[in-house]
Length: 254
Image 1 (cartoon, rainbow, N blue to C red):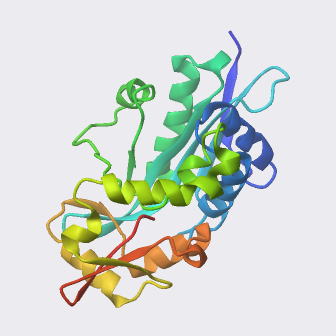
Image 2: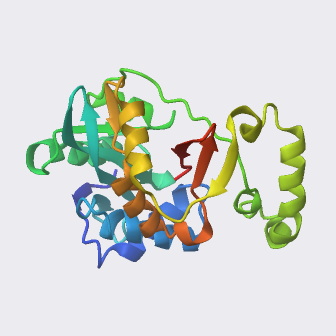
């Protein structure tokens, strides 16, 4: 069995090797998306650089695994604390045993001692869940994701068979979705308009929506502005504003 070593990544020097691990193991992102994600997630976070650890062997192999920790400001009860979200957990197939996986995740949890965060949480998939449970993560609740696709072009571009013609067929697909959608969003609550900035109405929404919640990652106007700017979403009109019954109710897919 190889001898494994986990160390803190040098985000500049190890960038290509880290993205290489993602490319081999994380499904659903192309090279351009991976490069962009590394930049805004690890180097441009307004809360500070996110952290990453890499897994190496004692042989001549390059980096064979990664684990990251994104910085977040979260509401816990009535107070806000600095937290980290465990992310980008990937190990090459030849090294997917419990030992290297546990080593990576123990390094992430070490941030509770010396990383300036007060809690660490994660959204592991079913394959990663046994590792997270083994090192002590608790499961207080499960996350459900609700999505209504408004524009299909980016979704279509993920499929090799139609990626090249996505710009041509997306308008047709969008029109079809509007026809067959059960209870269209606009019919239920009002109208959708694109926004180019996040104003104080998003702060008002955050206060109303987060009030009853015991735990929530901050999503006020400041966070949304920084997040959209990093991911270059605003120039494309990705956020949306629902103006219903004369009252602005912002909502955003970012």
